[in-house]
Length: 176
Ligand SMILES: [Zn+2]
Figure 1 (tube, rainbow, N blue to C red):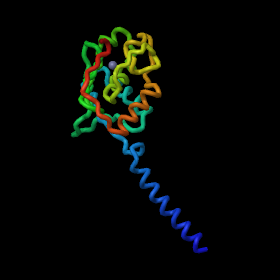
Figure 2: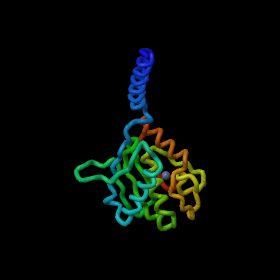
Figure 3: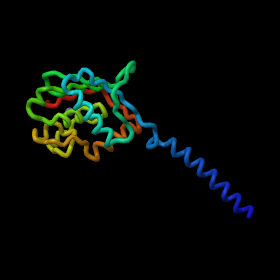
Figure 4: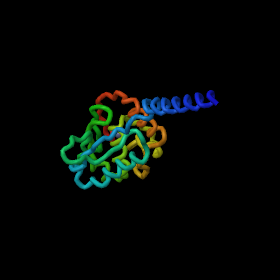
């Protein structure tokens, strides 16, 4: 009877320790929230929000949220007549342009928005020509309407934020 009680107490102690250990692992780390400012994205504000929601639906370690008053955004989004392009300063930080050059060529706007956010989230261009790849960008046909990261792209982003990966400042253009 005493042995049983000791065993039960030990199980309880290990269970408690287990919870604490699990909480310390990178996979259980708090979700990183990145704030983006789409107020200067002109006619593309809605599609910028859509691009953020696409990522939020597919990754767990980072969330893209519209910036609130008084807070400095991690990400600023602009619009102009050039190609869509992104300038990153570090993982999760930088700015990007929704460029009308690609929109007017017929590229799918939600795919452009999710792709450019992908750069901010640490993914480089991979010009595979495949519509199934988000980071194939303009190498996929203009007719490609897939706005979603594939499983590998989403897993890479989750891993980068779980480990706070170091990403060198970079510039990416939709066509280049
Ligand atoms: Zn790109």
